[in-house]
Image (cartoon, rainbow, N blue to C red):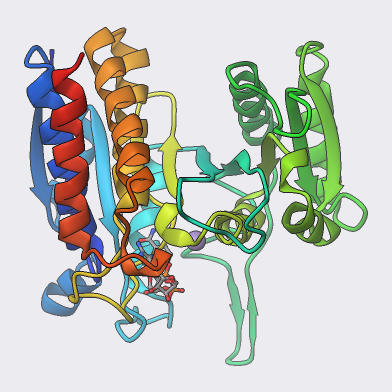
Length: 365
Ligand code: NAD
Ligand code: MN
C-alpha cells in the first residue's frame, strides 16, 4: 500500500521535530517494504505569513484535503500577528480543524521510562478527548466587536458536536485497559455544568450517549476542581472528554504529569481526514538550537500509522506503529534522553537513536 502524507514543518522547532519523526517513519518502513509513504512538504505558518501576507498557499489546503493523512510540526511566532491582533497559527490550525471537520482532539498522556513528572511515583495513562470544532473556538475569526473597547467570543455547544465527541471517547475507552488504579474503563466528562447552560447541555448529551455504552463506567467533574484532582490522582482517570478550550488547557497541564510537553502527542481526527501533531507549540525559546524533544512528534506519527492501519486494514502499518512505540520506550529505557528530561542528547541525536533502535528491533521481527 502507498500513502500520501501532507507534511507541514511549520515554524520554530517544527522543522527540527518533523525531521526526527520522518527519520523514525523511514526506519520503520524499511522493515515493512510493502508499505510506501510519500511525504509532500507544504508551506504555511507565521514565517510564511511574514514573507507573503498569506497564512498558507492554496496548494497547501488542496494537498491537505487530498492526502491520506497530515503530519504537522508546529506553527506560530508570538511577534508575528494578524491585523486583528491574533497570531497566525490559529488561522491555520483552527481553520484546518473546521474545514476538514477534525472534531476529536486525541491527546494521550502516559509515563515513559526515565521521564519524571511533578509526582515521580504517579501512574499515568490517560487520554484527553478534546472537542475541536466548536466550544469557545466556534466563533474564531468572527466574534463580536463593539467600538474599540468591547470584544466577545461565544461558546457554542451543539447536540451533533457533543454527541460525536462523546461517542468517540466511549468507543476509545472500550479499546483501553482502563484506569491505572483499578482497571475500570471510565470516561469522565469534564465540564462546568453548574454555571453554563451550554456546558450543562454538553453533560446532558454525554449522559444520553453513555446509556448506549452500559459496559463503560462514566463520571462527571467540574473543570476547576478537576484540574487539581487530575494532578493529585492521575491514576483515577482513563478517558476524559471535554469542551475545546478546556481540552486545550488541560492537555498541557496533564503533560506536566509525565515530564512536559515534549512527551505530549496528539491526533486531530475526523470522519474523512486526520492531522497528527505534538500537543505543544513552536517553542520559540529553544527553536533553532537542536534541543527540542521530538518524542511527542514521533509518537504522533505512530498514532498516524495506527489511524491509517485501522482505516485501510493494513496490518503492516499496525506492526510499524507498534515497532515505533516499542523503540521510543526502549531508547528512553537505555537512558537516552533530550535535555528537557535531564538527558544530554540533541534533538537530532535522539532521532538518530530512535531510528537505530527501530532498525535493531525491526531486524528481530
Ligand atoms: P509552547 O508549547 O511552544 O512552549 C511552552 C514551553 O514548553 C516552552 O518553554 C518550550 O520550550 C517548551 N516545549 C514545548 N515543546 C517542547 C519540546 N518538544 N521539547 C522541549 N521543550 C518544549 O507554547 P507557548 O510558548 O505558549 O507558544 C509558543 C508559540 O507556539 C506561540 O506562537 C503559539 O501561538 C504557538 N502554538 C502553536 C501550536 C501549534 O502549532 N499547534 C500550539 C500551541 C501554541
Ligand atoms: Mn494548546
